[in-house]
Image (cartoon, rainbow, N blue to C red; front, side, top):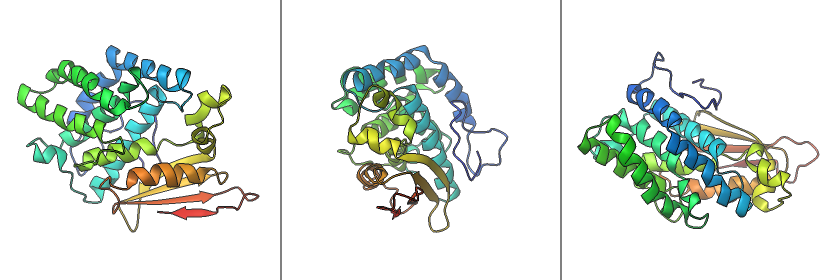
Length: 270
């Protein structure tokens, strides 16, 4: 993946031929099967019904999951390149290669609780994801390692919810990546249906999000706003998820308003 741009291709994020400083062979084994899994694919489609069709919230379906998954793995890339130490897999006695697997699985399954209800969906995601992981993981892991992978994935899923504090850097990555899906496309469905809530309007104020290596921290997040409504996405949503994530000292966020006629807010830096 390029050091200067985000890739949202819906496919394998990692290039097995690339010169990474960390192993990704296990992810390249697991990820294609995860993306083709019929039950998971159906869950991602079904979870948008309560969120969008019935409640009028922003997109929480397959496109949201694709963006969160790829941005979570991009964050992982950059944090590892910046010598950040991940503790989830390590403290379970798992391999370094399992860090990215935990992140990919948690990103893919973090919102499936929406099929039960939008409210408290993170808690509903836990038993649903547990069932999926019990079926899926034995294809790639022995029993003991599958249980440990499952434990870390469920922790990361639960902690994307702001009420729960991440205890691992893997979980912190999921929490922040979830908030990094903030561009205009996120609000497409409710906006076209007439939705004009603050989540929808503020999403439409964000034109682009790019993750790249930073000079003062491992990760620089550059956000292009086209009007001041984007401040809600940056300050109320992204900042709130960054706080307490464990990534606060590793991620720098710069949001710039590029619309010359709207200078109510020109720049935000976190």
